[in-house]
Amino acid sequence: MAKEQIHVLNALDVAKTQWYHFTAIIIAGMGFFTDAYDLFCISLVTKLLGRIYYHVDGAAKPGTLPPNVSAAVNGVAFCGTLSGQLFFGWLGDKMGRKKVYGMTLMIMVICSIGSGLSFGHSANSVLATLCFFRFWLGFGIGGDYPLSATIMSEYSNKKTRGSFIAAVFAMQGFGILGGGIFAIIISAAFKARFDAPSYEVDPVRSTVPQADYIWRIIVMVGALPAALTYYWRMKMPETARYTALVAKNTKQAAADMSKVLQVEIQSETNKEEAQGKPSFGLFSKEFLRRHGLHLLGTASTWFLLDIAFYSQNLFQKDIFSAIGWIPPAKTMNALDEVYRIARAQTLIALCSTVPGYWFTVALIDRIGRFAIQLMGFFFMTVFMFALAIPYDHWTHKDNRIGFVIIYSLTFFFANFGPNATTFVVPAEIFPARFRSTCHGISSASGKLGAIVGAFGFLYLAQNKDKSKTDAGYPAGIGVKNSLIVLGVVNILGFFFTFLVPEPNGKSLEEMSGENEDEEATNEGSYNNNNNRTVPYV
Image (cartoon, rainbow, N blue to C red):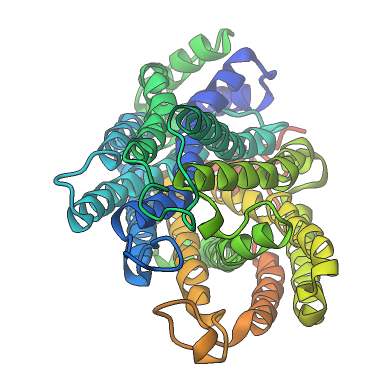
């Protein structure tokens, strides 16, 4: 590697934590804020849509979305996210992180607004519009995964890199809280203005016409935080590592980082390094020899984690009802239901989800990614089996609080564990020219796990007795057996973690082997022992 490249990248590695780092966390994290906000509010939206568009005169319970419609509303977003992760991950390595970064945010803003609009007034037209915009919203969100992680890792110093990348991901927690708090405020305001009886008193009047505005407002407001950060996203310079290692323009990298870090970084060459070609390509034999197992490790652990993580939605409605946070639907009107579900989910997020994220941010650079991921999978396994084996014990009303505590701990250790580390590590261990692509492949593998968790287990967890299943679903293996399967999934995640290296305290070039690659390319006449870069401590 040319000395000027080493100088620029070492300056980044040893730079003190500055205000700019925190600005970058906010700018990069707003995509994840929107992601979590959208995922959170869709459960409220689907409940309301069921009441508004699928009301059946004379039915004992309020209308709900049919299983295939519900699956479509949630599934198209997952499919869009998976597509976006692969496409924008690849594009981020081809065109540069900055050029692609604004695109993803604009797609999110436009499609968040579009999700709240509809062509026509019938159930089919409203749901078709929602599904269309949710696919492309997911596409934009998917692009934010590899780009935000890669940008943050390439801006960071090596001492606090893990915390910075994890902090970007932890913005999801604020998205959940923001969505919950806004839904509480808007539903309370409409409740105060438009009084309505419960469904069992008057099925028709329990859903006021103005309820149709609520879900649209909630969905569209998710675009605001993302839109507000668009200007600053466009002002961010390209990362020095992409400019120096991929675009081979060391002079520009030094100039960009001098402005950002407010220190003078000298560079005498411009594009002399561009003569040397990368030594191997993506999925070449050399790539598979060096990084094949690493990619298998990051992709498989994310896949297995998301199966367990996204299956949690199956049990939430039972838990909320069990502890009295949400009474039966027929005893509430439409606005009251939105208010109560928003309050319940906000409390769960506040007590379990958000603390887990920030425990990771605080400790990831102290105890390392590997230890946190192993510990997370271990405790998720323990708590899943603690729920599954004595499942009949937990179904008794007196024991429901214990069930909620163990359930919350399961997802505390998902967030203070593999949910955060699977996002962080792929942005640290691959060469700069493949970094965004490999993160996209890993995250897309996770989203595939999310589809299995959200839909496979929706059918799997149905009662064995066909007469006791949810409307429209075939018989399954039951909740107890589903929890046992999830426990086994977590055990597999524990063991696949051993394929992933520990990047804590090392520079990105050390982890990817780019020090040796660039030296061999640019200074091939040197003896290999003389041109090996000494890692900073």
